[in-house]
Image 1 (cartoon, rainbow, N blue to C red):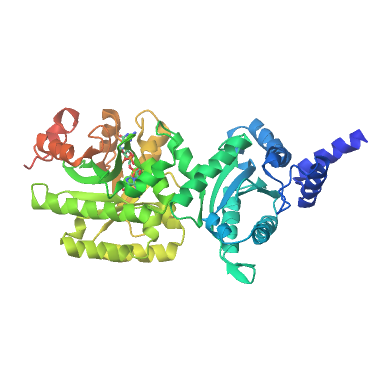
Image 2: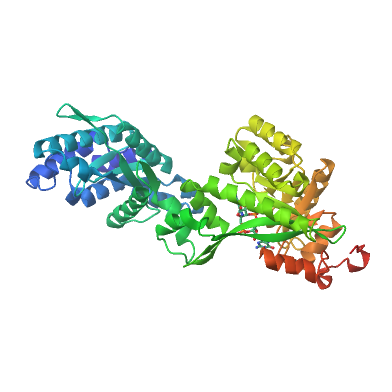
Length: 504
Ligand code: C2E
Ligand code: CA
Ligand code: CA
């Protein structure tokens, strides 16, 4: 009997068969009856919070096996790990609804809500269970997930499902929810902590007005990756960052290698946070995208950069272009073209001095409409750059369908290019091919003299990197230009000092 049991378990594991819902329900019934129903929430007949740990352990069995097996395979198996999601659901301003009903009506309402949540959970097709927490909060554990999206979809289905009113005492009652989600094993491995994290994400959503969901991961893991605390209030702070004047654009110069002049400045976003100091875009952008603030911030960046072009062009720096980075969200905005024309018109700036940097990830979804959109923008006179080239999967031949003016070779190829023969060959051929396609080539992340020399020898057009300057606040950027007689590469750093024609 024992042998058969082991063989069966092994077979189930190999075939990826999970606990069925029927099994879970049966387990719940047995367990609760054994323990005199202390694990059951009375009006809803759902398991209560005392059952949380038991259910979590039970549902974890498959996920954990999978996790450990994957671990043994090393980093590559990272993506094959299954997840368990912990969803925290709080009914929005529910106390007010309850206050208007009697006890019996309350129980009826809460039971109907519980039934609807259970039905939606069961419809996912994944092993899962709905748990009634204290007051009128619920939690859902869903196991065996391949992707986080499954839990997001469940949250969205719940929000949609709650849109249908509940009928109590012939009256329609409308209920909305705030939902937070955390994931085992990424956010934590302990259920108490996972529930707390999901609750924190929920509390954030609630602050924003509810009727939405929020993943704990997307907001917090970014924050935890540096010394910025995992405090959800950072998201709330970002909402006010523009009004409080905390966002700032830094500028990093691009240098033309034929003339030795600074020709352009890439605008790079910084957030001067009153508590955490300067926060960089790799944290700001994902945070802005998950909180729906990217549109607003993108518009701010665009306007701020165009203002800067105007200021520079009214003064001494009338030769400078500004390059702006556009995220996927921004590029997808239907009014992007309108925003651009409006700004150009309003500020009366020459579009030739504005450059948009886009990565291939942004463009390869929906190639045809994107080409059309870019062509419209390009027809205004604005320059289009392909950013981070070499980090994606598409060939230049394919990407050439897009109307680019500039190609920026990613920093990873430039690093130690003088010592890395492969990168040297790749970079050289990218430069050659780009030139044949009439593109201007910019090398990113140039840090050493040797890298610069290689790029000059191989006819790269422009360079950008710490060797010349980091991204700087406007004033420091202007000082840099002035100190260098307006537009020369610092003499000590320029190997072609003698051969550059200097026009002051
Ligand atoms: P990116 O467009 O590739 O920008 C270049 C990044 O590399 C900048 O980081 C810059 O400071 C850094 N960098 C420049 N030269 C060197 C170098 O020589 N060595 C090294 N190690 N790094 C160098 P930053 O400012 O942190 O920006 C990161 C990314 O965030 C940018 O990558 C860009 O994709 C995005 N980003 C920045 N500002 C904005 C913005 O206003 N809107 C959007 N949508 N994205 C932005
Ligand atoms: Ca860029
Ligand atoms: Ca780049």
